[in-house]
Image 1: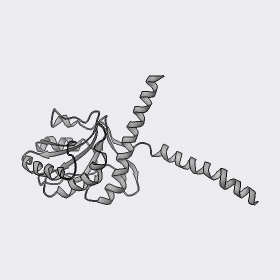
Image 2: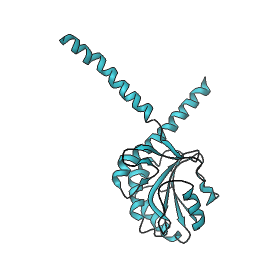
Image 3: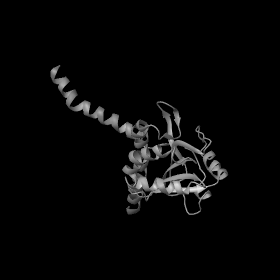
Image 4: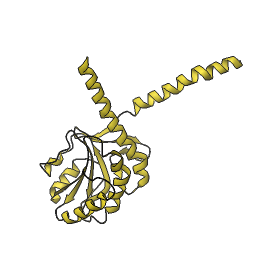
Length: 210
């Protein structure tokens, strides 16, 4: 009996553990598409696009000072960890009239990280609401055209999120007021989508070599 037990521990258990983690990779290898065909940011600025980019999209609203803490949380917990990845960008949608406050915010953020991947797009209320409604989420803009939530848009203009989040069920965005949510959920999801595209790139490269 002792020999059998030892054999199980030495040979069977490692296989079971491997299969467990292998199934986990399969199940969690991609973020869910929660909204297809989100309107492109070029609707607001012809020089910008979501296409072929992995985008963190935010709406800071008219009161930049009110959302400054959210921007700093996002900068420290997400941006600084991932901005060096190719085709990764942050796009913050801003109402006209906030340009000077945005420049101050960029200067402050720039003291902590290279802000080259932070992009601020200014537009009027109608266009901002049109873009936001295209997310088809359960989140709303406040009276200042802002929200503490940010969204992950993939290279095909799809909104990515979670279809079975343990707290919300269908999760469209990430609350930047909560450092815990950024650390425990958004960071993981950004890692997943970056890995997804890296794996796809490797596969395409491998296929071309055959």
